[in-house]
Amino acid sequence: MTETVSAKPAGDLDEAGLLAAYRTMRTIRAFEDRVHQEFAKGDIPGFVHLYAGEEASATGVCQHLDDRDSIASTHRGHGHCIAKGVDVREMMAEIYGRRTGSCRGKGGSMHIADLSKGMLGANGIVGGGPPLICGTALAAKQQGTGGVGVAFFGDGASNQGTTLEALNLASVWNLPAIFVAENNGYAEATAATWSVAADNIADRAAGFGMPGVIVDGFDFFAVHEVAGEAIERARNGGGPTLIEVKFTRYYGHFEGDQQAYRGDEVARALEQQDCLKAFRDRVTSSGALTGDQLDEIDREVAALIDESVEAALAAPLPTREDLETDVYISY
Image (cartoon, rainbow, N blue to C red; front, side):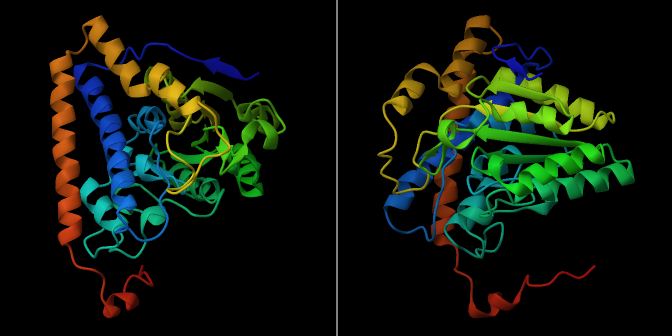
């Protein structure tokens, strides 16, 4: 049976943990809003897919992870990168295609990776991530590290054979793997309600013999609780979990998307369900944090984003010689 979780407290977070969660979510939002502005100027090459509105998912999951763990992302990967600890300055430089980028300016927005942080990479292949984390989860199991693998994927990828095969493999091998279906309602412009046969992606978990949980993606605390339980179970040999996070993305599928397929859902979500507003209201009304503490984080994050853009614009572009580097790896 699929369980639905929403609006439950994350009682294990102290003040430092709450501040860290807000800083991560605010950094993701500020980063994406700035990339939205900068892309319109025409200086950013390639395509950009923004994660704004989905911050509670990446943050709620990744706050439970450490250096033992790895994640696989999607084409909409900036939020996952930031939540897993990839350097924001290097990310911005990568988006601008500069040599100081996390992939030396040769990957761009859809291919940011940092293996030193356990970030296997954003991925332009729909459904490309789930098989990757089966590999890292198997390695963690064989080596006894206690690590887990987490695959973030969208509602479109939920219909890909690679995803379904990975779910099956993870159960057959009882892997420490977490599959996070980020259902923002659309695979590009195709509504999930039209393209996904089941009412909920998480309902499919039963077919693979694993728990399935649906969580309110606007509620950081609900995501944090569900992810914590799934990750702890995986670390202790309990096998994989499928988590479906439901929310709304605030920008189009890609920058330039006219979004003719959507109504007023974005304005409604921003006004009534925004995860950052909900977090602020909850922690300040309870007395766990003060508005001044959160305002200070807002200022620090704004300065970081400004610095990142300035540094990226000043950084050199890759050279012809750079084409022949990072092609092969030596073991």
